[in-house]
Length: 408
Image (cartoon, rainbow, N blue to C red; front, side, top):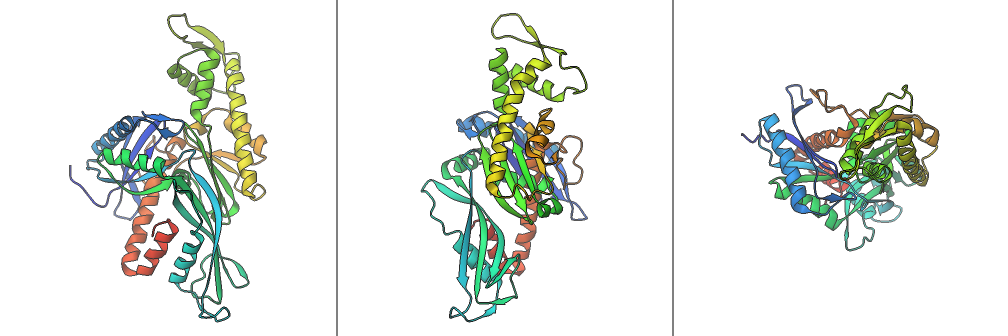
């Protein structure tokens, strides 16, 4: 297979599945799908890697399937990072523009870089690192709410930023697993930020929206308002918790409980809840028959618990009354039947299930909330490449981009 530098690869390592997506720009400059590989994840527990070899093997299988489909050898990828170790915090930085406190001059790109660097100067524990630095707004003297102060005149420049931090060891384990599969990590991206690239419009971000990415081990949240990130959080409840509840409640093996969860989620809500479904038992005991109503009694309390935790995080963001675009559910857990109907009264907001977009030739598989992150990773990678191309002609802009991503 030939290596082609214009291919962009996204790699989403989840606790349930591992996805590799290969894309490339077409003749019109639009990004199109070249190949997709999916493998069952192994070596994860509660959203964290616990067996590096098994995780790397799943990555390798997904990559091999994507390589075969695309007809290209993969040697680098943009990789998503998530998990309960992720923390978000808002910070502020400030600089004086002139040689004295009252001297004024025009703001330059390098000033934006410097003030963002000051906002990054928070003290982190030794085991934590910056994953993403997301500017919110600039303030120039008495003028607030500035998005791009370059060319404006003032004496004192400030910036509000949202910082996403991660466990160094947890992040490094992800990178190491990818490296063991023979691939170099071009960049790591907070997964709901990537999902937002694929599922949210500019209007969503401007009006205010909460993207809820329900994975296997955790649920990730990112809140936008006025076009910028206001809050991020990770909730240690995901789709696997629903599966475990079913397995315990109905005394059935985990694989069968997963099938039951999917069957409950895909059922026609217009059909009577007393419709019956067969439940295999543990060991050699005979199978039993239960109703969907009984399944609902197990699943709905966990769903309501998750929605309460999400609501608490949205309230903590301070944007609960500023979500004009409502709630967007992404991730495999978004397909859990009845969740949207439960969420709308819980939040008092419109709720929709995300449909990833932004790529050409997506086929029938990718427009699915379970693939929101991997689609967003390649969209992010393409934008990063375009910005790096701009860096070659404008070096200062490149430095600004690096500072915004938390790189020196």
